[in-house]
Length: 106
Image (cartoon, rainbow, N blue to C red; front, side, top):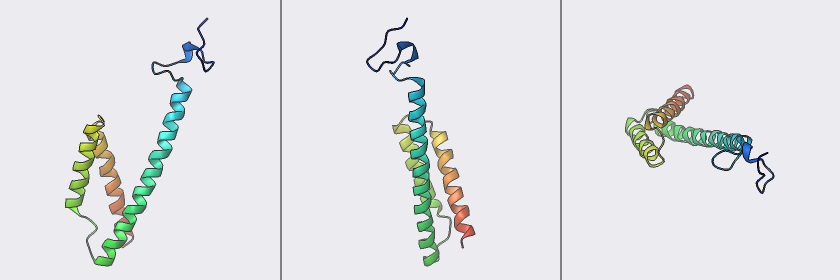
């Protein structure tokens, strides 16, 4: 029989970081919720940027700004030890979706 820890969980249920599989999954669910909330927030702000561009007669695409974003997220990926190509692919997708929405609303 496995020893119980202070939370009443069997040590057989624990992972190497002291959490159960269910607790780890709950943490991932919370992170997923936060990610979706951040995407919604980013999309809202991008929509506001689109409105400003339209009011000022600016083009939908700003390649210089896109390059700055890609450079910034690439550096962040490196700092947080996340696959740079994955992060850049995610942001390319976000940027392309925002541009498509901007074009539709013009």
